[in-house]
Image (cartoon, rainbow, N blue to C red; front, side, top):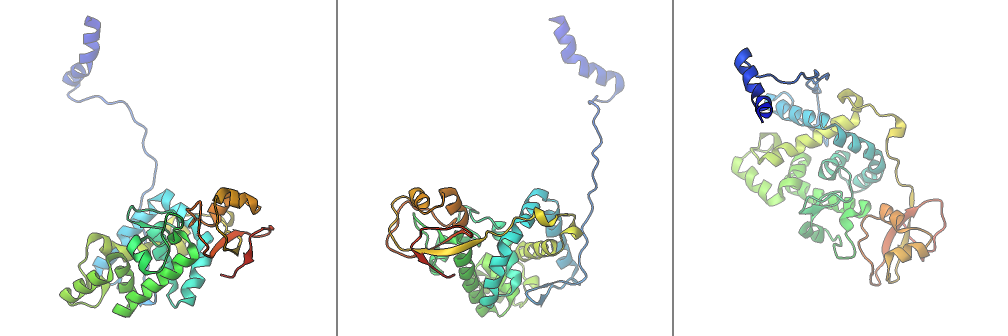
Length: 300
């Protein structure tokens, strides 16, 4: 019992003798953490970012530091870019939306089709009401917010509606986050025309700068400390579209009956939720280079 008491009070005795608490020796942390370099000039969708404004530079620097030192997440995003960029950007071009809006999808979902914030879902993070307004099916059987083609076309419609309101792509991006009616009210109350001059909620004030930070990193990864070789990037999914019009009773059995398995069908078609469907035509993407027994060929 006395021995135990000595052990318990020994740190106090040491403190009394030396005047300071004793702590176990620790190894030094070997790392180099430095600020990030800001560009001399930058634009979003062809619209100049006023980097001569010190407050604007500070906001951009914050988001670059966050993205650069959030190593694992940013690295995974960089690896995913090559899988989805080649699919999204042609759609943006066809719909008349600047290619920089690809980076909006990056910050919304990190290019994860199953991204779920609790209120919004999919590549472009639509809520249920917005998805319905954009004519995307969200049901117990299908969630087209996860369809890379249909959701991107819907996002283009949404972005162009915002641009029609504000005649400015940067404000259109801010409205994507804040909502068109709220941004209109804030802009009119403050009587300014530039996103960079608006006093906004923290989330929306950071929103465009998060897009800009990912644009800079994705366009020049090595400048921000990310070194990837060509084979480090995830390859695009090589697929071909087919159409299915028949009723499906069991999606896993349906996949096997058509020379594919359920996992692969879900990989290429993350929008699938159902185990049954009515007689409505859906476009399925399936791996190229194999023979399938689906009913009809279909174009994108």
